[in-house]
Length: 130
Image (cartoon, rainbow, N blue to C red; front, side, top):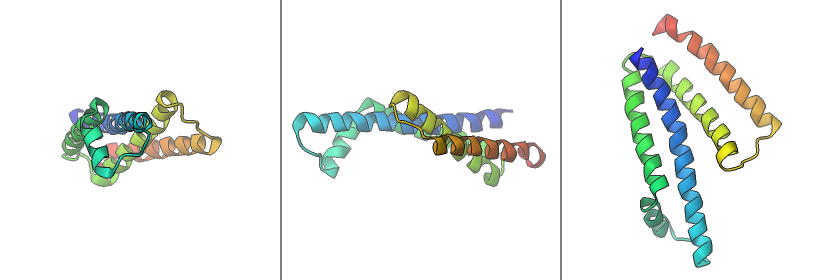
């Protein structure tokens, strides 16, 4: 049970990490608008390491890695990875729509439904092989 919880935490933290890093990138864009020019790569790094959203995203990514590592002690990677990445992708798509007002078109919604159906099919086989 602990390994299943760890896998669930991993995909939630992967999605959260990406959304937090996106929030940090939006702040960098705001900074560029304030100064009236684009930032160089090194200036972008400086802005990123000073941004709490980006730092939080990196920390969530590290925690996701630790949880995924723990989950892989029990689950085969051929099942755990597709589940983690697929549900992480779904979290990112839905989170981006809610948090950043990114629009989802019908194809994306159908795709997310297909992904969730595929995850359900893959996950239903986990209990037999795990």
